[in-house]
Length: 184
Image (cartoon, rainbow, N blue to C red; front, side):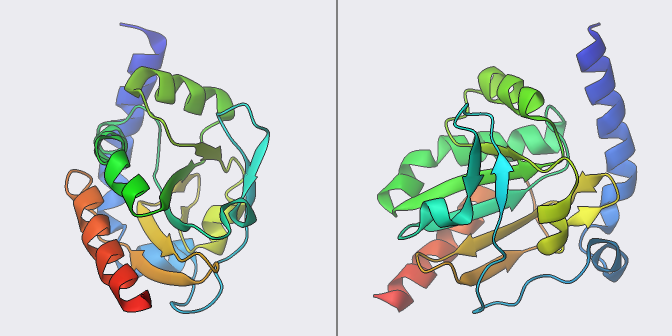
């Protein structure tokens, strides 16, 4: 058994014990306030696994963005969620939408995770939790499983806090279709 596998398994066990509160008021108190719908999304600039240095929300001006926060690379729920986004990436591209993942893992961990899972979207390293806190998605040392849809003008249009990793991408696509039909 590799050390990385062992540590990831241990992290998954620990996370399963604490993440059950992710949609409760206790988790909300730990993570802070969620940003307000129909207001400007909190700005961010974080290092990415893609080798392009840092990525900021302003880099996506004119495009829809699905900004999703997740606890840990290589854990079961996070891997399922990432795989579903990757499976649906063409559907997002057809909707002029970029997928961006955020967790407290390092750039190197994100690079390994993307290579391992064949992910073609950026993962951002929020190692100090600053951006996760700005989005009300921080739980001490991990990002909580939250997602946000941001419109081309940088306005927050939808928030997801009670997430099933297997079905989440489809849920986001349905909401994205609803939002885009309202905007046109």
